[in-house]
Length: 334
Ligand SMILES: [Zn+2]
Ligand SMILES: [Zn+2]
Image (cartoon, rainbow, N blue to C red; front, side, top):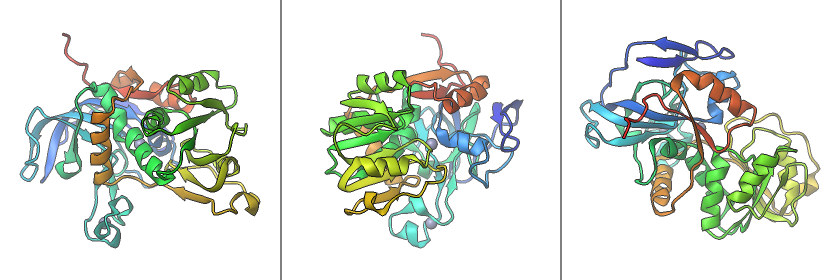
């Protein structure tokens, strides 16, 4: 099969032809129909997250078609469309797993990081961690739901049900989906982008943001909560300063540059800073059910598998409108 391989952090991905994977016990073999490019892929490729297997097939927003399943993969049949998320495997035994917090599993393994992901024509996945996908989304549109959408959903819940005035820092794939969910819930969105990113601000307004401006600007009124998707530590004190007493600042990325020191008074007033880590299968089921009920407009830029490096570069430079998605198998004409 064709695959894009990361031989070592810091290198460009290499187009290669490698043996197709064989499913093990409880796994399904999937033909990859679409795979989103997530910012986490950049952190892995750049070596900001250590411990990646090498060579590695990146990609954890996989929409695949079941080719075959091994014993124990009984939930799915050949031809089913399934989604494979970041969470590839959990132990089921540690204190976090037993407490319903498998996102924090001590021994968790992640797709496109410790196990090969979807920047390839085929992949294998543990059937217990695959999701059925809602109708009404093309393969490319469904792919970003699997991480950008899911993590956005978890971050929105962490922001609290009371947060009516919601700040979003970094208006990329996750933000453009969560903004629609938040609006559906009756919240008002204040979008913060890189200074001078007029297009990003216009995109946020198109998706219903009541205000869009530079992350260096204060919002026109205090916020109840803020979600930070951009991997920029300096946004933490900026967001704390923008939220009202009791406000919550949620850091939704897996990696962030160092957070500069800040005066205690911007945390005072029972403000909270927290992170959101990974996902549980329950998050996935909840969010994908929601995506089935609320028609989300998922903006995608599709690229052929061999253009994965270009997609990563575009994401790094902030040039992607919505989500970049690789399409290893082109949909059949007609
Ligand atoms: Zn565990
Ligand atoms: Zn991701």
